[in-house]
Image 1 (spheres, helix red, strand yellow):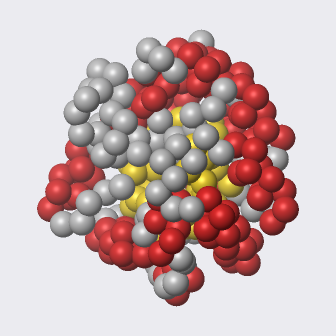
Image 2 (cartoon, one colour; image 1 turned 180 degrees about the vertical axis):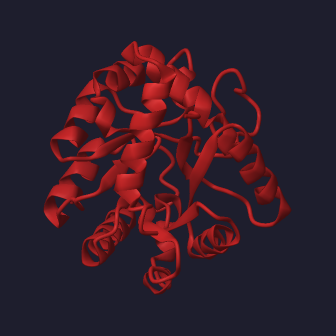
Length: 252
């Protein structure tokens, strides 16, 4: 059986550029992709891209950078075909493009939406671990939650795992300055890991510095396999099974 992958977090552009990405991904063995909304407008785009392609799914949400825009209109997109999660949402104290109190309020609103609709929650958190955990504990961590593009170390990973949160690994795991992340991935059970590209950002080695695309998730999986000392095919199988279960792709 051929090795296949799921890129569980990418931002596929609309139109012909996105078509090229999807075609290249399929050629690389990436059979399924989840394209992620970060504003209301981009969430609408994600829904349209997913509708355009077989085995491409969408999430809807507002990134913490844009929290000041609020989540108006996001709930109305949830019933759209192939919408499989809420997010990405969370806290970003590295850039503080939105005030922190607003970020916290909007993050809590996303959590409420995920719990209300029993949908997975896709979290972006940067330099805000304690507040992220505190809000999840206060609001109730959705039963399917993922830290996308995880950038913490073993302690942060344990905090997530203790709450049943899946760790999603991006191309950062291949960067020389990411030893804490590699330590976390190495310590994380394989059945609690997923892989992503976060395209068009964070292209993994050997493509670092270039525009990323879903086909490159294979390189992320190879890095995970090396850290766990197992075959790449095992990582492909485990992360694909986790993503399919996490997002409910069998029924999407």
